[in-house]
Image (cartoon, rainbow, N blue to C red; front, side):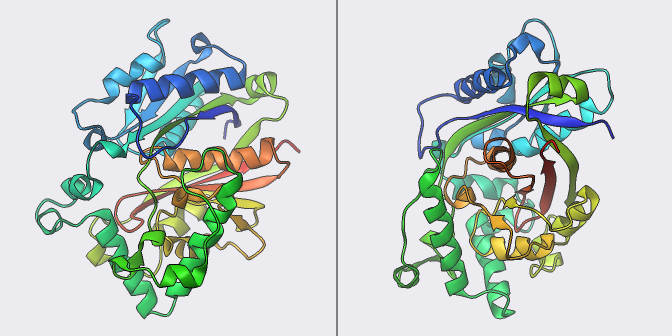
Length: 350
């Protein structure tokens, strides 16, 4: 496997609503990431963006976003209708061919432009799920109920996740929601979709992220402390939640095994957009109590759909480059009830 490392990144502020277009959001993070890596747009050999036409509200919305990367000199470009973490995966695979040295991966989303509960059912199975109006929160509530009934989690456990992660987010300048919360007070709140309360849900967020990666010697040339990608894999399950065992995330476990994720990490950044997902993912990844989970606050602090997974990679890389950790894990997910999952293992220079 060709050694590839993260050498720069950038995030936008994570906000409830922005007046900036996705192209402008991406312009800011592409500029920030290239500056962080000490390069210019002309040094980028390949670019890949992750976004969603449903969220953007128009067909081929990614075409206008290419303006953020720069049209000259001409370069190889791609797009995935997925979170930016999958754009990073494609960029990483492209560098494995060995003929290019530097790539950029991006993710962007403006969920504030419409009602997510109306948008997301449009992406569901058109015969069985879409007519039901099966939005992400309703499907997550079904999975949470399954976990509660199986005795794998309690509502107090879920409130504890919300309180812990948002308290951790106080020190994160990119967090949208943070603060000190009392678990008992949270449990007195009304349900949004039983058994989920407001604190169990991630916020609606506008934002973008970008990551610069480079091969071997180029990475060492650009950074004194490159963050090496030592394992990378993703796996999917059936789209229909009714044919899956929602008590476990088998695709997460498969991706972790393929990526060489053995559970021994300093920090794990997980795309747990609902409180019940954190213990489920922790079990699937084999993470012990000594692993710090989502010290950034995670998606419960900011959830820029189509960039949330890439943000997890950035936060995991930050722990190594800026905070002295040696080995971290980033997780991303897509689809209803953790249908498709990606695992990225990161290590510092030894």
